[in-house]
Structure formats: C-alpha cells, structure tokens
Image (cartoon, rainbow, N blue to C red; front, side, top):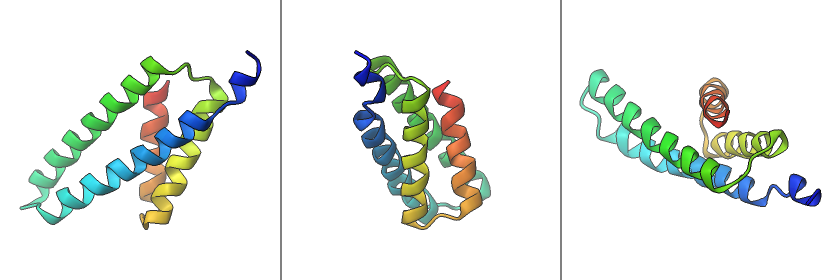
Length: 101
C-alpha cells in the first residue's frame, strides 16, 4: 500500500501521452487556421478535449502530490523535447497542474 504512493508509472505515461496528444492536434490546428479567431476557437476546443482526458484520468487513478508532480514534469519535458518554447510550455504545464487539483 505504501509503495503504491510512489508508483508513478501510469502518471508518467499519461503525461507523455497528453503532451503528444496536444502536439499532434495543435499542429493540425496551426496548419489549418484561417485567422486569429479561428485559431483561438480551435485552441479552446483542444484544451477542452485535454481537460476531459485529465478528468477521466483523475477518476480512474488516485493521484497524490508526488504523482501529480511527476505527471506535470514529464508533460513539460515532453513538450520541450518536441520543440515548444519555454514560456509556452510553462503556461501549458501550469494549465495542466490547475486541472489536476
């Protein structure tokens, strides 16, 4: 039971998958945008889909502080490896951590 508190495998896998999900859909949104308003609308839709994925993950997994931190950390590093800027990644990670509360 105590060791489960430190088992972050699922959290890390979800963090990587969520970052990849964002990157794949964000590129589609970016390449197909017709203007700023259309881009913003698609971004809102993408974040809503991500919010649903986060809510589902939270329902299925008991997340403690350590697991949330690990999830956020791998999410951030995956986005940085993909090539997003530091500030952009920090903003997305902050958004994620807010939704993990």
